[in-house]
Length: 377
Image: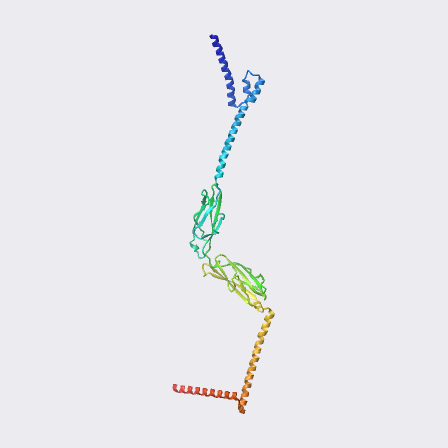
């Protein structure tokens, strides 16, 4: 019995040693990450040559498998994370358009369209800009997830241009800016009534236009100009422009600025008036000289012929008057001779009777005047 117990005790000790010799190297390898050389030293039953080969083939494979497994797991996790991120980006809307845009005063020009981002506000011709200090802007995004800024009550500059921006930001952060421009005219004074440009074309009898040079050169502060044209020029076309808010009128010209020239000095006035205050008026003066021998398209030869005819007419009239006077004198002499000789015809008797009747009428008138004087006394 004692022998059996000793044998069992020895077997138990050998088993413990075997287990310890196997477990300890494995644990040390996992903790330190050392190469299988530790395993080679701790395996006595196997020959050294045979022990070095298996550990190299077997033991390193475990960490490799573990590393590959871990890398595969991390790759899968990254792929999963990428797959979960991409769908969230795709679902975000990029719509940054407006659905509607309105202003509280005036009207937008052009008419609103989501693709158009620039607008001007048009006002009636009789609008009182002095009351325009602020304006209400209403806008709605095309996408409910987009945000709109720049709406509500916005301030307007006292004079000149005001630019108002309305920004639409899409769900994904993309932005679009719509702009509204308001032109508030400046209150004009007499010093503001100036031409911004002045050009003149001359037109000949054939209707051909060419540029007309005048002196001095145009300057908005110079109000008087002079030009000379040839006898073949029938008219000029005047192009005069002023800044917004000023009405320009060329006196004596047609709507397109055509002014018909006459021979001699042609004085043309260009009148500037404020469209808000008709008491503000200023004038530019343009003097165009044209030879008098060529009026209204008449050639010099025709003009000389008319002058000759004009000089001859008084001579002709004088001759006719002298002949008429001589004729009357001769008739009177003839009548006197007939009267003295007593040679009358029927016409002469009628004439004589008419003469005596006229004498009687004159005598009666004279007597009536004398009677009147007596009664008055």
